[in-house]
Image (cartoon, rainbow, N blue to C red; front, side, top):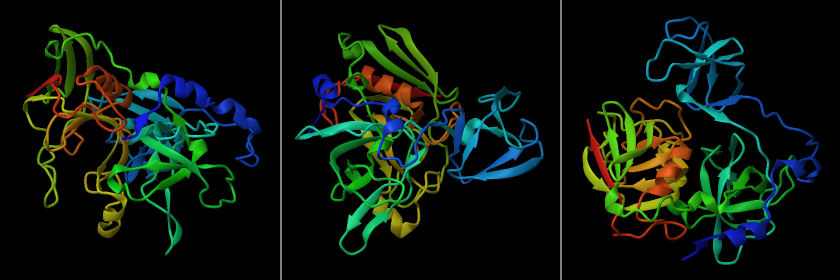
Length: 361
């Protein structure tokens, strides 16, 4: 079993950030970057309204993965659970199906420690993964790896030859397609520090920690010794959502559970290759391929989990296939806080005694 890198490994790797890339040979002509307020359209299409209300006239439409500059954030009257709109060119767009993104190129690692994998996250709006086969050569895949998604890097290798990129590529491990390597430009992935995995209050016994989810109010509260230590709004499963044969219902189950397993980087839904035969290539309720889901904490054997979410900003309303969608930094908090403690690069202690979870209406 490969293990994640230690703090000493991390310091040895000497991962740098954007500053040194002004002189990088990997990006011809690169001199600066635009770190303004930019959002990615994370649904099939997004109407731009004349005013910040769904009743206002549609001025134009943006489409999936287009990047839009935001000039101003506006708090409107509706919708009550998420009243934030963004003023952009042409009018206003609601933030519910948007993702705020940045472009933060990274200095590539020189090596990956032997026998280990390095946990990374995408630091650009999106990057296209490639695979290689003798029959077809280098082939791009869809969907892309999106900003904030989390992936295990297991090697540094040469990738496809690109006119606009001459640097090294990371080979990414994906447990759904573990027999195939995926390759992305190394400058697009940021190495996560060891603190990302360090436990929070590990000295507190498991029976003194509790996660409570209210499906009516779409809220989550974490308790220690009966006292609230963390609160947020979430997005649970869509009641009555469509499911395909063999899939679990999209409604989040109510009841009492315990945290069972924890996985830092998880591919949910179809694999790239099963998706290629069904056409379900994008992350919507009807198109379910989600690679690199951050910090999943599973609480049922059917696969329900608390996890980070990079495809919407609509917390307070049911949005998921049954899991509990959270902001990625908050999912990381739950991942680090809940027991059992994470013990290796892929899963926690199976069958261990875990933090209690109560889900109700």
